Image (cartoon, rainbow, N blue to C red; front, side, top):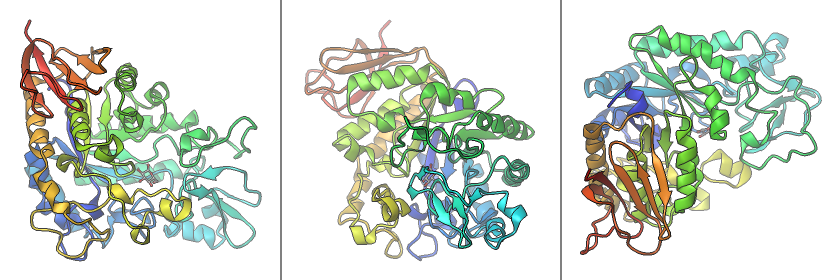
Length: 482
Ligand code: BGC
């Protein structure tokens, strides 16, 4: 690959409680992850991104952190983390972890001090006697503190928002970054990276703004303030103090032109491109998403994560999910795969009584269906925290697995550049074509089979028809004859 590894690397996302269980309590942990790192290395991934395992009451499965520099006993301890890191590095995998700077846990010692009435600690959050009319992503945004005041939480009430206008907040997070970077962590995925600062004075919503439930970006006062991208100048300086420099990837859930303000040589290295997460199975929609994102390289392609419906279900069938996998692996830029995507796992309709997502409990939106623990050949040692449906282990034989390995291996050999150019086209049969210097990606998104351009078919997500056509719901990479 050309450029730095992160510009065109393949990163495998691990949601620890649902990955692999090392101690038999039904919840995945760091020991389980360590034992299965060879599976991730065997796929050909360059790095693993681990969602929060830090100390947390688990009200949002770790995105409510009560100690930013320790490991929750549910997942292990610091020694277990160091062992995992050592094993990953020995296998050639870099390790990216989550940092959650927008909010902490209501059990965080500083928030507990604030709740107990310490005025100085209160300044570090958003306490008021006159709450405004903002909603949170998971329901109402203000929680009574019990003494006539209220505090702001843009997610669950157990996730109070830090006040980034308090001068103690930025140095606090500098120390968190340094702690993990000193340990040898290769990078950070920044949770709600476009949050942090709120509009000064927390004014009420303007009359023409109606935030949509579940979408932080639909409240322009609660996120994407001019001060926020500036935070990452400071973080980049810290990341660049290390050898090799550490990498910062932001969850910047804004339209690509706005998200681009958070990245660059003096800010975050990358921001996730969520275009394929929201686009329907439609050739024109995908071409538009791809072209728009590639205006802001290097792109970080992603189709699945722990917050969204898995692709076989979202796009309607497993063949489309394989085609989507070959698409994100076949475009210039980095690609993020979510655990289980290599097995083509579908979304699970978790019975209502078993659901555990706080978003489900507060707003009726459940992300549990993409968080069901992975099937392993040896099984989960105890009943998993979310029940797996009958026959879950049949996915171990999914054609997605050899496809993922083969596509990542080819991608390494073909060295697609980290940035474009990519020429997108869509024809009358809903055939999507993305031509770039390494090869041409074709996706058959209409009802019938489509012809492929002349050249060598390097890989396809399903076998070609007897007369050499790409069947519907399939993708292929073709090296042009010329
Ligand atoms: C994470 C979610 C989490 C939220 C609050 C998100 O963007 O990906 O899983 O609920 O941040 O921390």
